[in-house]
Image (cartoon, rainbow, N blue to C red; front, side, top):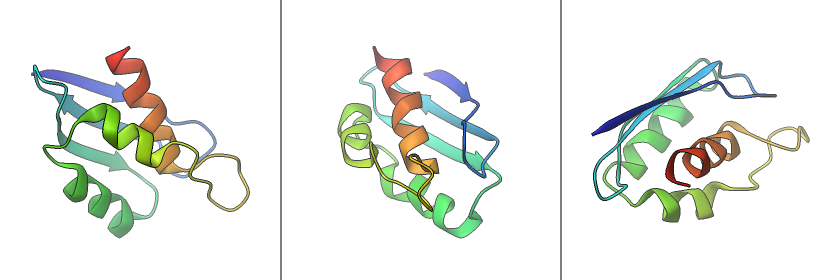
Length: 83
């Protein structure tokens, strides 16, 4: 299991942590800051799912016309971790 810590840019959350297993499945997703309930829900929804599939779903999601969101930043973090 590999642990990833990512610093999101342009969003309310200040840190994102997650683990990737040998099959690139996501585990233990946790955001620091941001919309607590919504971000906890994302973590629960993606637990055990394939990282690339999750990134494809979340990529491009926008929050308040910022051009990004916590979900989009998660996709960016995943892309960096699995490339």
